[in-house]
Image (cartoon, rainbow, N blue to C red; front, side, top):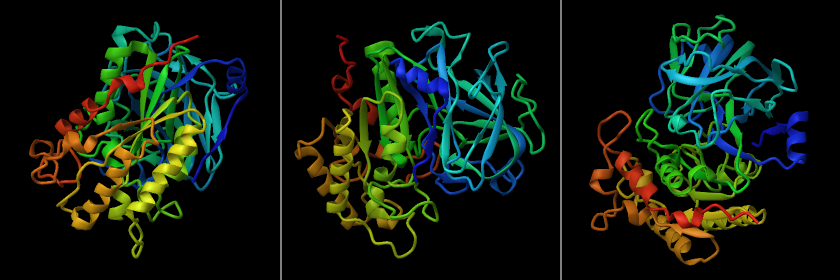
Length: 437
């Protein structure tokens, strides 16, 4: 399912003037809650009864990868069953818990209005806005800091469009608590969520030579078994390396979805929980996003495992995944995006039998051989070599215990140590910013 993008007049003016917008943060929307594969999600029955919001305020916490004084927000109602109305949209520097840094709140508008109605299946951009506390993209005081985006839900939303696995704690006021976006304390936000609701992106005005890298994939890109609020997915580690090398001339955004596949499912939305296939969401999550120049794509094991597919769905063959990777790469390369593909990490002996089966491992190895030798990609990252114990065919032992909740491994997802190794496996030279004429 691809959301229809609604542009406002200010956005059209900026594009026609040739302004350099760059994606700084994204959340790939995957369905109406509770469809998805969340991590450490608290009981939502008090905050969002029936997974619907009603006259309450959300405070979504996000970490921009590239800072800029001029920004715009993107909101999505891709999986709603009715138009939703949002008002009192505010952006502030996050202080911790549900609190804001005093005096940093900025107001977002939509075609100069204070509220916006978003039709079913659509997304909308705010007008450009200024963040007064941002001196510029090189402001060292903002490294690692987060923004809190607060907005009021007018009336009742029905199904909530969300990204299930934020790996970040955000905050929600009680139903019927009204407009609280400018309240700087955390007292009025008693409920927490580890999902992102409605808020789908943040773009910044960036240097013209900025490289914007999108990490595309499934739960291993989404960050399963990484540390809650730790920002230690492989893409986070790579981001820190890129900024150390190239400063404010690079941005890295994550568009992974837990349970996602390259070619399946044939139809969406649920009962399938992994979002629309990578091929189906390329337009929405890559091609239409601001300024993307490179994609690192690692995905395919879910096509073989089918753990989240409707009963009776046949598993994909290696040839199907290979053709999907070829098709997706061609589409992205046709518009000038450089495509770097990662080999699939190990899943042998995973606790979910369908993933751990020898037949799945054989298909995975066949896809990896294609990735390494086809020559059709702009680069290859050998994530398998970085994470696999050659003696066992599994993840290295130190990469297995769960960093999110503790406890035993599932032999399918790496932990913090494994994600750091993946982030270190990427050759930075393939992501170097272009040289301006």
